[in-house]
Length: 412
Image (cartoon, rainbow, N blue to C red; front, top):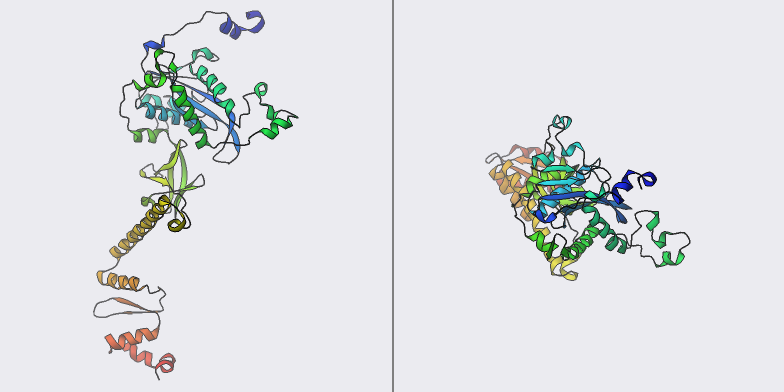
């Protein structure tokens, strides 16, 4: 075997192997991490085009449950960081050891205390969370229990997807083959989005976790996973470390991201650069920070409103419309209060009277009343003249106005 096929074949097919007793472990002791190129296509949220994404997963060795995963377009450090965050949040505990691939993404400086990385002002992510890291030997697939999980995932889940394209030429489906017109006509062209893919994988994981655990034959995977010591992890401490970051500009409707608006009242009135942190697992909200990294708010995704919610929509549509109207009025009131703090009390009384009468704002002339120093607004000179005749008949402006052609035309 060594002479014909090489050392790897000798290692995989001839040499005795070591069998490890996973029953000695507890849930959360060791998480095994690896990446898997999906054999079906998903819609790229950034380009809108179909592509084969990467599933990076963290599997609990004791229960064999996939406790955290992320669907990303390529296996990179940010993807792995996001998966670790998901795993810690799902377990509600920080694992003791991460047993992971020896690949370039896992060996990145993002996860270690290399001198060059410390000089940038950062600490190693794993060490900061108190996690030990163990790397598998290169090309030693049998050392990683997650490989068995991915093989079952491909056979039981991926091959059932309409957008399945195969992991290589050997297992390419018939509809992609040359001259297979019948299969091509039968084929369903549906390609799921990232969110739809996550929902389907979650449903399959619920089924998978209902199966018997290989490391505890008397319990299911879900039952073994449930028997763990939770630590009440604060998600904010993980968000700052592990969410992807982009620079955006605040607009009228908040922050525009992936074709949607994200808004919070604390963004109202600003138009400046901000940092957003997001997780593709949950695109209903994003976290917004100043360029210096100071937390501003958590902005929620803005939904579109029914065009005629009260008459044609249901209760949910009408309630959504009412809440948005109330928010608009609250923000307007916030602006009015800010203006009130700027103007004097007497000026505010006049402005409120004008708002109640719904008088349009265009102004041609102005007059400052001597007794109260209130700047009264008039649409034209005749309105000003009639006001002064009534309230301040000795004002010198009246004599000046009587000498004009406008006065003679209107009053003589």
